[in-house]
Length: 220
Image (tube, helix red, strand yellow):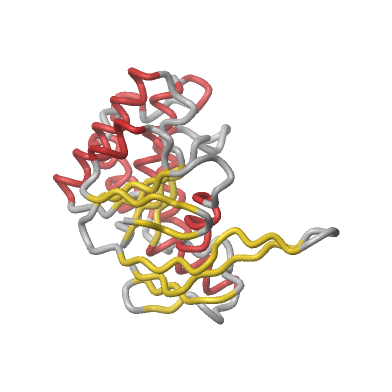
C-alpha cells in the first residue's frame, strides 16, 4: 500500500481546517507498523483515507496497484470488502448475530458460498481463540472477546492490509496486552499486514516500524 502527498482539509462554517498536510508513506506486505501522535492530530483521518472510507482533498492512495481515486462509492465498498480489513476501538459487531455469523458476513457480502464462509469463519475464530464461543451473541462476550471477533472479521477475506484504529483503547491493560499479542501472532503466522494507530507506547515500540504524526505529516 502506498500513499502519495495526501492532504485532507475539512470545511467548517467559520474556516478551512487542514488536518493532513502532505502525507507520503509506503507499507510493505507483511509489515506491522504503528502510527502514534496526540488526539486530534489526524491518525483516524489518515486510516480512513488509506482504507477508502474517506477521500483525500488531494493526493492518491494505491493498494495492490489499484488507485482509490475516482472510484464510485459502490466500487470502493466492494474494494474495501475484499482488500482491506478494519478494526476499530469499538467492535461494531452486529448484536443480533453470533460471533461466527459476524465473521461470516464479509465473506457472504463478497459472494462466497455459505458453507465455505462457515468453514473459514470457524478457522478464524479458532485462530483468535474463540471457536468454543462461536455461537455466542456479542453481549454474551467480554470486551476482549468482542474485539477478537472483530479481528477475525477483519481477516475474513484475506485482506491486503488490516487498518487498526486504537484497537485496545477500550480495553483494560491486561486484556489489551493479550489483544496486542494476538495481532503479532497473526502477523508472524499469516504474514498479515497491519497498520495500527495507537496511544499505547508499549504496543508502538514492539512494531517493526514506528511512524509519528506531527502537524499533519508523518515522520519515521
